[in-house]
Length: 458
Image (cartoon, rainbow, N blue to C red; front, side):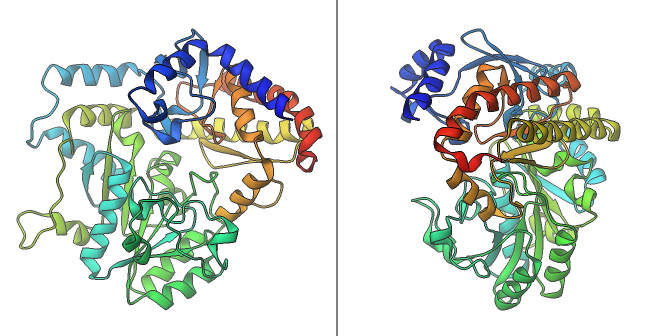
């Protein structure tokens, strides 16, 4: 098995020789040659130097179909002509003013008209800041300190956002009342104490925990579909139950739609007909430039009105910067209902194709997701929460990592964790190529699986 792993890694190294050389240079100035943990994979990531449409190119001259799209943010792929034109026009006028611009409220108006919960919003520079500020708003509005989050939910690179991110069963405690885990060194223990954790897709458990802590809970924050641990959709009625539970117990409901806003013009909340009190956004609303936003009910967002006494301060250097506003407006103008329907149909085709490939090659697994999003699991059991995903990851060993390298050598560029993202330049041809590469990669890996991971066979 070791030799087989080494042979696949060696084939990748030969495929990306220049990237390997650049990695060694980068290590002199960046820890491990890396500055974005989510984009790192072993033995080293391929260095990219240009992209257009749904294609991306590495420094060794290889072309890939980009099924990562900067972790879902590039809904129009790369270098969309209308976005490029809007940004170029704004570049001639300046990049940052420390003053309001018309484009700030123009983009805000577009978002407010689309997203059911958002009556007013404020900008920030990324989704992490958006969830952080939504939580701060909830604390200020309710006067309560603790927040409830979903076990395995990722809400950005801040203390609350990463708590209990990977619930290892031996450490996470009872499923009915999970232990709040620090997850990574350096996360503030005070944040651990101020966070209550509940499993995804379990409204009865959540209701008990909300009732137990309701006098301390300011909000419950949830991704309508779990993202980083495998694109896990909500069970029918789950989000509706959360809305009912939070209302009845005087707890705000926050939707983290940084990823799921791409599911429909109004995001997952439109798709499922559930309106939260606050929504955190990012990624697609910036047209490919750094962006975040949080918004919701007017009475909550009024906390940030500087014309009111004791307003809640919120400021950062590039909030609502003109370049991002221009790109965001151009991007949203192109996102019409038929466009969502088309990319969602391509996503469904991709998921079905991957499921068929797993069955035909004889490897245990499934593809989850909704709309234009998909994720591969080497697990045939129902996947409804983070622990289901984590248990599967323990069982699969290095297969996911090796599958990623195999897909790269076949010109398909997904996330290392096997997440796939559709963009508007894609057609059925790109999806068919991905399914073909996936099938060939599984066939390449099958002898390894038969030898040492036979439990992954059907």
